[in-house]
Length: 316
Image (cartoon, rainbow, N blue to C red; front, top):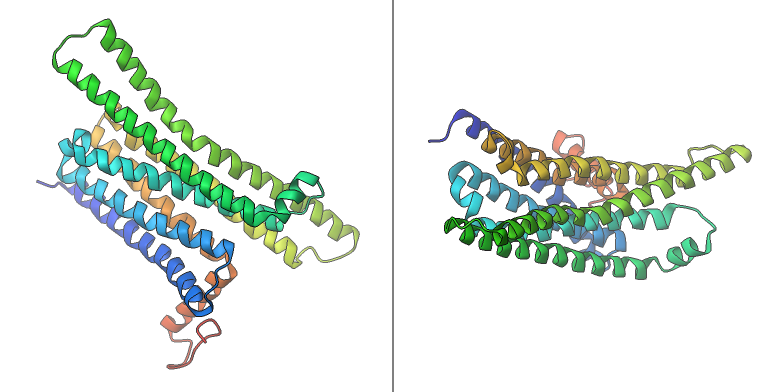
């Protein structure tokens, strides 16, 4: 029978899931509608749209995992269904993180101002760089998923040896190998984190230089370039902090079996995990002029500030 704690857990997860679907669905609908009207989509819109789609899938997987924690703990811990969910979660999760990283790199290359030859070479070939980054993201996501599948195979071997109660040196060796693979699996998160940090610091340095130039020329520091720098920095910084929170939640959910009150630890990790796909996407909306304007117009329509039958500039 489901207790009060499980009921509250499912309500919170359901609320976060609904919010995440609405936010990411809004991004997909706006960019999809724009593409349908113009038959063209900018590189940033494409990355944002694919990011939103990957997060919708990720939210569905996390919600399924939440129901398993409450209604089928044994299946969640060791069943084949859980292994399938883990494979899809790992692939979609890494793909989503890399899409957010690609977005930060795109903002950095388009907005930051540097005269270094390498940076200029990347800036002039930004479309090609993004294509290669997206392909690399797909390959790395497949690599992390393959690593997880190998971990499952090794885990099955360990369970088979343990069932015979024949704890030999071979068993200890396989167990240590399993623990090593499990820990090394978290290192797949390191490359996007490093790339995001590099983009963030480059934008900070570029903003500092640009601000000094504006002050030397007695020009207002609130010019379009400065505002673009600040918006990009906010998006990348929010991704960084939400990613750290998400990674902490992922560790809690993944290593819940090693913590006291296993089920409670997993539920806490699950709730923290669901906050990231919705929270960062909302910040992306506020940092993107087209999405923000459409969002504001939609709120005005809902609050009755626009007359019935009238249309804002975005909807015309």
